Length: 315
Ligand code: CP
Ligand code: NVA
Image 1 (cartoon, rainbow, N blue to C red):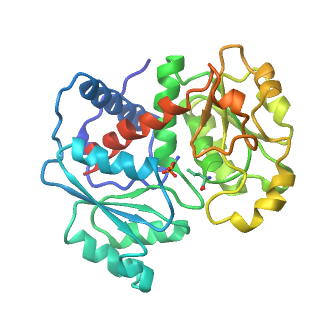
Image 2: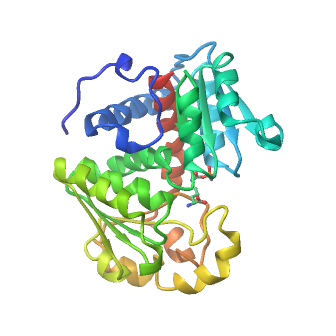
């Protein structure tokens, strides 16, 4: 595999808001650092790269994996993470994002935010003079996809030339996964016509993919999409904040699940991925989620290693 020659200084001080902002070489380099940190951890080698550094973590939505990966990861890097729920900090009582950004910039070394509005993430980054990491917005989930690429590399030993089929909602996961196209992958997004990914994101992902020999497509038929896939991916039908639409979505997405029939269309050695949490019996069957081709817990573990790489490089 082509291995880019880059240095940590290349990343220091940058934000991690969307994969659009990173070249394939930069993404490969981040994956290489994640792999090194993973091996060091497994070998018991300490790596206190961020000793004395702090990460503020703002959460206005629930989280298991993202919170634990950043918090435990920061500790393993020798630093400290602060969990700031909107129920506790003044953002929840209306303090502007731009004020929070400037206050935190004077006290800590990086900010991770998980929130609804993507504009809030951008606003935070605009006013902060320390790195801002997008830990999920309604629009994008880029830290998840970095961990997903690491997982695919581990199981398939490459990225280029692989077909990844995503079946489900045209949501934050679909948007971020489309940027795997610029790693030379063929990304197919299958959603109902009324739940397509954002047209501008599709166009941008397609343009970036084309530049690097990849391909990004939207199709309506989930079974046709699964044909020959190396990676099958799905996510919940109703994301956080869409709870009131759950009943309508339940009807609209009935055929957009990964089940035995989907598996039969994919490559015999295809891997199955899900960002989790999963709704068994909805977007994925219990049999597939717990089956031998599922790599969902490797994927979840890789959040830790990928997020450590992000922090180690940016901060
Ligand atoms: N996949 C993911 O982001 O998980 P959490 O919501 O638990 O952080
Ligand atoms: N699309 C999901 C992802 C959860 C990790 C959500 O936004 O709720």
